[in-house]
Structure formats: C-alpha cells, structure tokens
Length: 241
Image 1 (cartoon, rainbow, N blue to C red):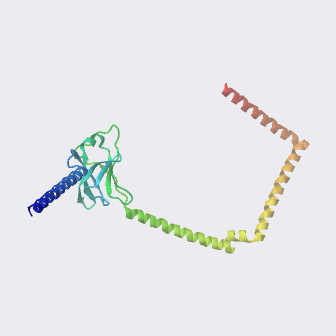
Image 2 (cartoon, rainbow, N blue to C red; image 1 turned 90 degrees about the horizontal axis):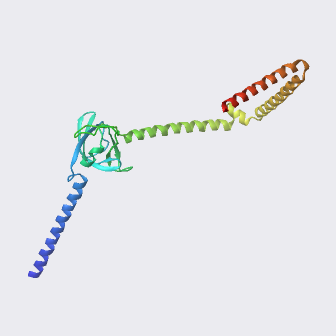
Image 3 (cartoon, helix red, strand yellow; image 1 turned 30 degrees about the horizontal axis):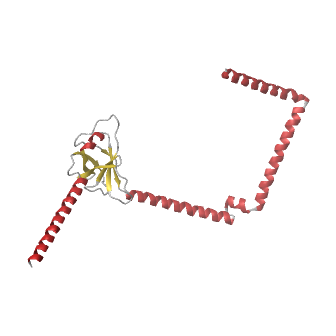
C-alpha cells in the first residue's frame, strides 16, 4: 500500500509540474503576441466604423506584425477611437504622416490594422499621437455595387436578346437589310455603279490631261509639284549638315 501511495504521489507531482509548465508556456506565448514583455509606445487613430476589428488584433507595418490593438472606444455617434501598442524598436520607422488602414489576414481572416510608410523626411510620430486613417470599404457596400452591376448586365442581356430576335425575324431596318434579298441586291448594284463612276472619272481626267487647251494647266501643276519636292529635299539636306 505504501508503495502504491508513493507512486500515486509521484505521478500527481509530475502531472501538476507539467500543468504548471504548460501554463507558463501559454502565458509566455500569449504575452509575447500581445507585447506584454516588450517595451511599447502608444498611438491612436479614429474611424467612422472599425468593420469587425477587435482588441488584440495584429498591427502590421511593411508586412510585419509590429503591435496589437490595445483598446477600442466609441467617442460619439460617428467616431470610434482605436488605441495601438507598437513595439519600441519600431518607433523610429513610424512617421507622423503615416496612415492607418483596416485590412484582413486573408479573404475571410481576422481583421487587422495596416500602417503605411510615411515620408522619408517626415518627423517621427510622438508617444500617444493620433495619426490619420482611411475608412475601410464595407462588404455590404461592395455587395450592393455588385448587385447593381449584375442587374444592369441582366437588363443589357435582355435588350440584346430582343434585338437579335427582331433581326432574325426581319423586323427593323437591320433585319430587313439582312433578310431582304432585294435590298441586298440594290446595295450591291449601287456599289458596282460607284466603281464604274470612279473608273469613268479617272478616264475623264486622263483625257483632260491630253487636251491641248488644258495641257498647259496640268504641266504647270506638275512643275509646281516638282519645285516643291526639290525645295523639301534641299531643306532636309541643310538640316543634316
């Protein structure tokens, strides 16, 4: 009995010791994530809506987690204040003109704050300073916009379908042009006549050039064109020199 009791006490002691170790490891990991053991400095910002942001969510700068959300308070009916704790070694990179945005870990991940980089020659942000923010894009607004786009696309598709039905049935000007063989034949004949007229005009111009009375006029035009060509060539040669 004494041996069994001693073994039980040993096991109990090992169990309690293991429980304490796990407890302290959990405290250390959580504390490290929440910057409980690191020197930090505080910044604040405001939003009209924090869009699902919660205390303890990460803060990123240049794609790296640099702090956590410390507190979220409602200032008035249109403003929400957000307090941020940033690791002290990051302080020198946070400028007064940095801007805070609300983002997410992924498509459906936790919300987080993203601090953009400030100007190269801007002053460092001071302890407790309020910095500018950009309002987040609400998912409801995106869905409403997509719904309007989808409705417009449906209306356009329906109108195109009606137009195609009319065209296929021969209704309207376009439908008659496509389905009426007489109109198509008239258009083809018109095009042929235009070609013949163009050919006849060319023949008349050539005949006019050979005419004794008009030959001087066309020769004068040719000499003027030749002179203009030579002057252009001389101008190009001067520019090259």
